[in-house]
Length: 235
Image (cartoon, rainbow, N blue to C red):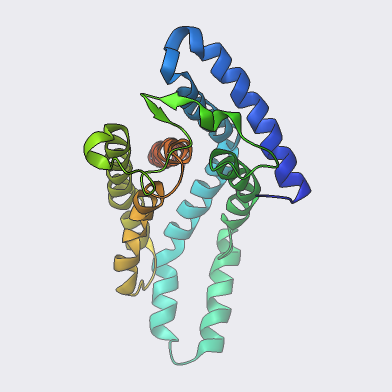
């Protein structure tokens, strides 16, 4: 349970919004309303964070543009760390960026992401009424790991895990690996680390269904956002 004031307040606000969305969707979607409300709230929050996503992509493109210069400096001054760092700083300064460019937008998102995740795992200051609703016959508060039914009779969980795996694969293929390719002097170990995208599949097996739906909606949106922004944000 989150007791930190701002996070708890954010969870309460998001819970109220979620209740309104569920009530609005119930006449149209019936038993699917609560799950669709989770998706709707996630998309709304991601839209609010879109300017930060643009800033991150712009920073990525700036780093990719100077990557060949940084690689050349690393090769030339690898035995002289002080000179290497000084030359790299000069390149960053000339490009109007820094090694940490794009990190701040990501950090700004963390409190809101924590609040959203806390809401969907029922970690707010009080009981979350959303988790008592059902989605396709499964309670949003149910977890696969604690279910005696298992995947064979829980097609909702099976479908969710499959969708998360597909998003993780696409994210690795179209977002993570291209970033690694553009970076200077990436160690081989990073190729293995790229499979961390699939952690969401494991997490979804142990958290409430509501949190799993949130993970899918959030990661799918993030994937689409990255792919689109990389095309439309100018180099």
